[in-house]
Image (cartoon, one colour):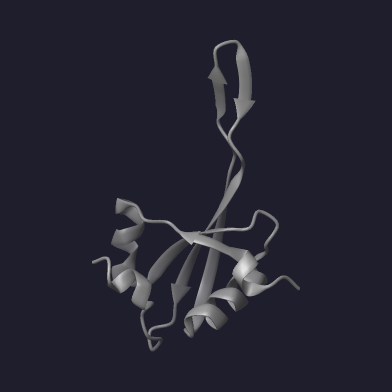
Length: 97
C-alpha cells in the first residue's frame, strides 16, 4: 500500500469544484495509479472524515508544441469524494468560501 500522502496530490480549486462543497463533494488530483479504495482510505486518514462515495476521472494530457517540437502534458486523475451527511466538513475548503 502507498503512503496516504502519496495518493492525494493536491485539491482542485475551481468554480465548479467549489459549488460541490455545498453537497459535501470535494475534488482532488490523485495519483494516476491509485484506485478508489486507496483514495477513500487516504482522505479518511488525512482529513479525519467519513467518505460515502468516490468517483474518478482520468484526464489525458494535451498535446503542446513549441516551434517544431511536439510534446504532451502529463496525464492526471481527479477524484470527486462525497462525504456522509453526519461527517464534518474538510476545514481546508471551508476557509476558501
